[in-house]
Length: 107
Image (tube, rainbow, N blue to C red; front, top):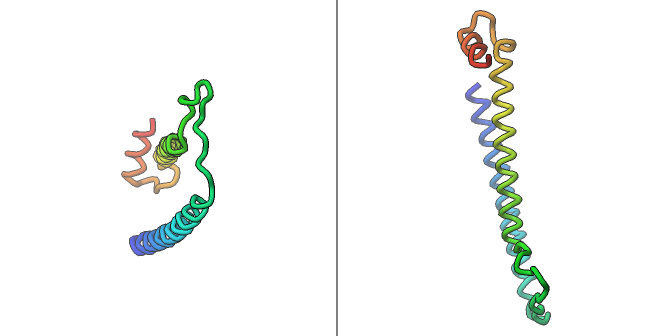
């Protein structure tokens, strides 16, 4: 089981590394594109509408969305772990001390 976890972890690390490299390449391309476009476009006018100061910035929108997603993922993880704990007596051997302990914890 330890070998499977190690292999699984190595695969996850490789996938995450590949994603980071791809993201870096995309960011560099966007930065290059942005500098080229910025040099040929006029400055945007300042917003002068009522309540315009209450409109969240793009950065605030991203932070808020990812904070929510992080909380949602943590909640789903806890739920999944609680389901495993509650069903442990059904999935473990009948004589297993873990099954009895988990069964008592789930009640």
